[in-house]
Length: 226
Image (cartoon, rainbow, N blue to C red; front, side, top):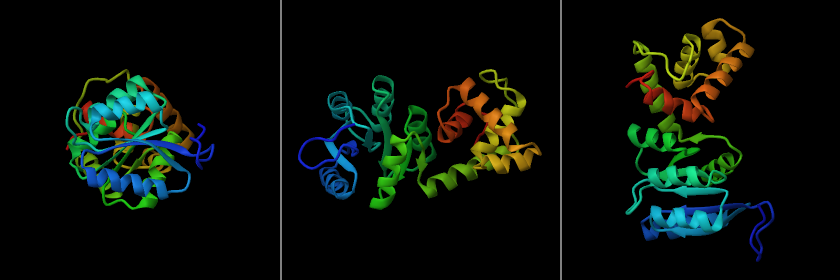
């Protein structure tokens, strides 16, 4: 997208941010304006304003807090991803409980960062989201992986979900445990190409975009439990 006149370049990433705390919101505006290749095109004080700004400005990414009045970050994410799918969403919040993380990912967020993230991490997450890639804060990812591995010790006996085969479910559980395709191939004693085929099939059947959504899906369907 082209940047707005007045110094923004044609390749600048256009961002709307939303946070109900004035000091935090203004601080984020200042921070983002210092990042190369990022243009702030709007700042909202709640989820309703965030959705309205996305509708008006059509940014590349919405950077949103979770706890806000009128419309929280999860609902704002859900509405934006449903109504304006060209806009990706990154969550920046102090709330890192598993329910908050999973709800945000299920709503369609591409990234999940805590508010102690530095400028470099925020910039990386914004650009990754715009490129269709997911970014999850390291501590949050470790907790999700630990929970997934704990649940994976005695996996729940579940009915087939979305037509997934038993092998695709195995692959999904290992994705939820944080394993790469190479590690999954070693664990299942198959080729990496076979794993990629299983991943592509299960993503298509479950309508998943990336591994972050796969983790959320595994929890939601009960294939992995805490």
